[in-house]
Length: 187
Image 1 (cartoon, rainbow, N blue to C red):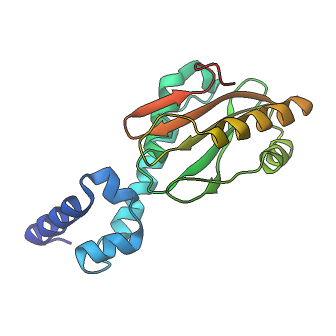
Image 2 (tube, rainbow, N blue to C red):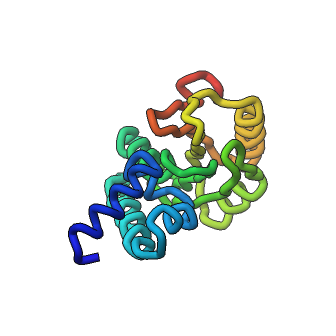
Image 3 (cartoon, one colour):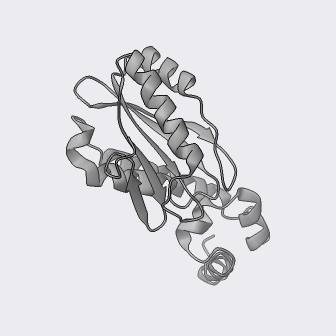
């Protein structure tokens, strides 16, 4: 990819097809291959995705995650906002609200993702987490929680309460912003 003209051609094809770099970065691999006519950029895209994830995760505070809400939102948006399918992510926290682990708990279709409170809480016990922040994206861009989003959150909060695990928030992520279930009175 050392040829600047070839790089510009591939860049133009990707932007024409996907509209922006973040959307091209998060597009399905087969769609990118189709757009550029080969696997030319797949290694580069994998490296860039990994680097962005590392940089954004590095901005999360090593102590209390809740002390830096903007960093948490930036991280979640950078990780999930441009994904073509719904994803459900869990930030597992210790008693001091420091991040123990960030894990993708589920990946779904363009309009839904299924997660099970039981599996999330099982993981809490395995990690010794005493609190969690959950997040999922809406590829549609709509920052409106669905009925199933609200039901799943309510079920998760009730089950977590029985295990003395706090659910600090459920954050809905889209390209244009985020919505906090806690701030909306839904948690």
